[in-house]
Image (cartoon, rainbow, N blue to C red; front, side):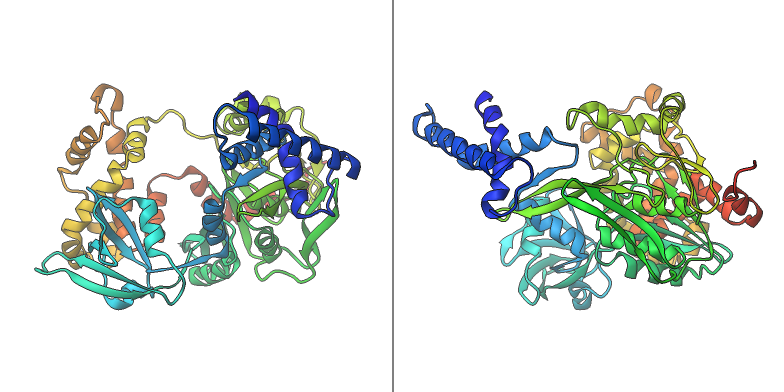
Length: 535
């Protein structure tokens, strides 16, 4: 509506200052006061005279969002409901019953129990069907309602009625909610002799504790492959700590600077615990923010080799400001800079223009476009070897591997997006879990001996048809056969965990990881890539 568009010009600039009257970010105090009076006058007449009843809450929220959209791509409004999930995501834990669940045919099913969590301790197992929560039917419950009803304050009680295969009567579990960790390390294992692999999915309060534990688990004494692909970032403090973990003493990890924020350097005076073994960092177009801080510092200090595609280019610092109804706004206040002085943020115009979002994808899949962009980027020198690196947004890998766009995954993606793949795997595990656990008592036995049932592909096609995903063999080609290893990996994840999922995926096809293994297992090549340029 036009009226909402007009409202946006003033509203967001004023609301934070109502709560913090002493803070003025732009304009004089007199200008702010004039704008406040103007807005109050406008809102009064809107409320008094507009032909229909005005939904003040909705209009206000839309106004805030519209103003932020005019500023930059990353300033944002967060509703009060969304703030709960945000706080859980970055605190590293929440209080609940400790299960992973799915909803199949309107039935709430336990996919797995979290080790050490309250449900596991009471004896709940994968495959249990929760039919009632606190004596209220759970049939037809939504994903959001499950989270609302199973999460709650630590120490509070929830009663779950459960149907279990082979049991004639439902079981009742009285579960005392407890802190449930949200893990940020997806996988950790020894990928080659004395070489570790660790995948980190985001930067939350517990990330560095998890990373240290993961590296110890791998026994990675000679080198490490740190996988930050798909990692959209998180907490600055954890990014700085991770960067310092890999760097010698006294090295800057990142600096920030903005109009109202003086230049501030972040790093550590002490040498990191893992500052000497060989290091490879995997990055892609979804590696953003904190991931770019770590990878940029590693590259600028010639500490390790970056492999993959250019990162996203998200280098704006947001300050989160709470509003009166427990919602919040994130206002961009500064830019991130790598140790050599490169700006991480990609250029942006017109706020959240569509071109901004597709640019980073084009740099990953279109080598000609990438080369044309790079011709105009400012050049910098790494701080030890003096290698040439480029600014202008994002972090370029040392070894670029283009994404394979020739393979046909459209049908697989359609099945996945419709929930078909996850549903069929869950149904299959519900039927076969006991037999599989007896036949394959270890992951190694599973990898060696397991193959999908002969009818699994047809079951997938049939269920897809039921869910509205049409099967056309002329268009699909061999995509299901090509992705059979992914189905095996999904079965392994539900039997053991995410590490085992990635071990199967990595064993089948991962060109970035294959190159990382070659580089890190060849000291001569590794140090040649980090050497000073020939004069």
